Amino acid sequence: MRRAHRIAAITKQLVDHPHQVFPLGEFADLFQVSKSTLSEDLAIIRETFNTLEMGKVETISGAVGGVRYMPYVPMLDIYSEVSRICKKLQEPHRILPGGFVYTDDLISSPAILAGVGEIFASRFQELEPQYVVTVETAGIPVALMTARALNVPLVVVRRQSRVTEGPVLTMNFLSGSAQRVETMSLSRRALPTNSRVLLIDDFMKAGGTLRGLADLMGEFECDVVGKGVLIETGWPEEKLIEDHLALIYLQEVDVESQTVKVKPADWIRKE
Image 1 (tube, one colour):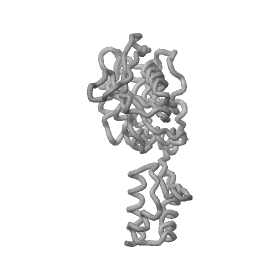
Image 2 (cartoon, one colour):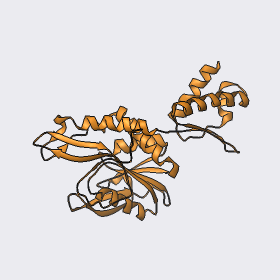
Image 3 (tube, one colour):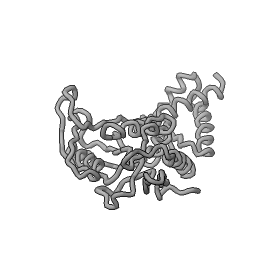
């Protein structure tokens, strides 16, 4: 197999399985080349990815060493991707009675969510989360694509427990926006204790759901290493949770003028 063919095949394997360590011997056996030849192939891939800011190809030394791909999204690409979503959110036909904004098509789009997942992964991967956790149902697509980009399992917290889940831990939490008590539950088998978890949700008003998820993770004796939301509203001003990362800031929905004021979060800079 020619070098160009090997590089194409190795690149696909690495990108399709981010964060997974591939032993060099595995690739050497597959392509029937020496490890020195393989190292030259990886050097070309690494240099290309660095030049185009497509991510990081990292070589790990030692007995369990190998090579892995770490996703990275440059700030300019983050700004471009988030701005594209904001532009779609500004479409007048999305405004629903009561001042709600229709987002189902956006959080169900693989093309959009693939980028969102990679953004969250690139921002949180250094914290080494072992699981991505969300609550059903709208947050599942966002969390799933984030889990895929991190190459870790997705854990879905239920609004109501299911008999097929076995023993569950159920707790009540206060919904910050509706100011009512709601329930969430998680199977005891879904999440090992002392795990490092990343909380992801699609939408946040007051932050009651994220606060409830964080409290539930405490019951599982898990360490919450980060919290990410796709869209955060400007109301209410007082949030029940602070240390979170939002991509989009929804400022206002004016039903009368049929306008939606939305922008990328302040940490996202146009460079």
